[in-house]
Image (cartoon, rainbow, N blue to C red; front, side, top):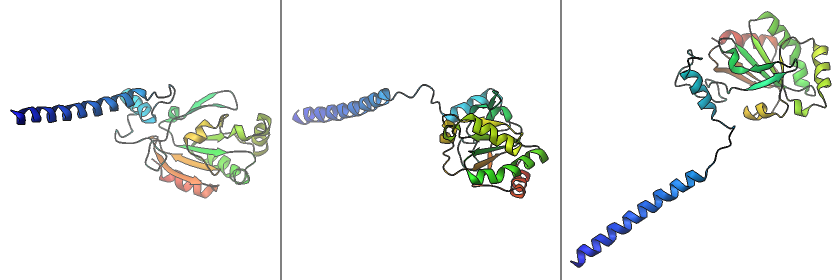
Length: 202
């Protein structure tokens, strides 16, 4: 009889311990409240896949910043007041370039980028780190000086630069027609190298 009572007490204690453990994990999960606007990048891509917007993207592809990953989507206003969203260019080859007017290597590669843009069927999204500039006039003067014709996107709060974990500038990403990162480069690129990487993309 005593053995049965002892066994019931032991089983009860184990049951209580399990219940307490599960309940505390549930409370911890309930306490985590995600930031409302901070949705998973992967969720965005999965939604696009489900809606049939990106039929060419492998369902196993992951959103990330490495070669072979789907490039994280973003939306910024251009210097002309238009809105540009990376995913709007799915089906086209894209070069994303992070730059600023005060950056000497950025200045060095701009003429080559313009020539590349004119010669090849490439979308260039030149993301200016606007928060680091003195004013917009400085950006406009730069565009006029180098006679740039590709879209200049204004990252006014450097949110996209943070999203892409940009440290040195210029930093460039080559994105293939499926939205997948084909190549990334830290530092300035010359025309021949841009063409070489362009020709490797789908």
